[in-house]
Image (cartoon, rainbow, N blue to C red; front, side, top):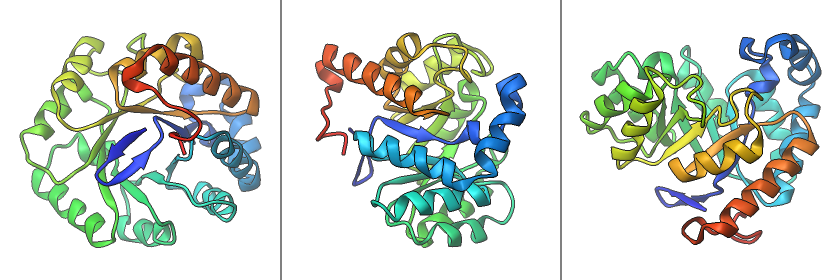
Length: 249
């Protein structure tokens, strides 16, 4: 488990990036979007399966159908929700997230990496006023995290691309790892398997060693089972990050 302010979260969150069919998924991108984003029930089924295994936490991107899928899964069981906001109309997104009991709302990278301190303070206040925990997403962790740490922002967590190959880690893998090593703010790894380019066996132990937790996009129950098995094997070997079915709930 990891603690974000007063709330306990599982170290592995169910991500949602593959459902959008982003370009980084290559030739699979269009098929993924058709299969999942156009069918909220298919996304909800994977969220629910993930949660039922014991990793009770979901990370969503605030697109309409993904929020709808989270609501479908939430009707079965309450769970902590980490939500990456979109750059436009943040108040409306916060309103749509309000029915969830535990929400960590993340300011998107286009706003975070601009490093406009006054604006970031303003959005963070909006998130706090909505009763949610604020966090920040960065696509340039090597330079952005050290800059954010100097701003004394009222945030609880950072989300950044972290993986063993250094894919998407800007400006470099070395600078990103140095930044997360020196920050006092918990860092959740995004893209831990680099859109399927890294195996769970190779990628999960690395991000477990470097970060407080990670968000893993999945497209099948088989992938969820594999990731869960690797997570359990990794934590059994490391008493500092030991978890069990009960402590992940």
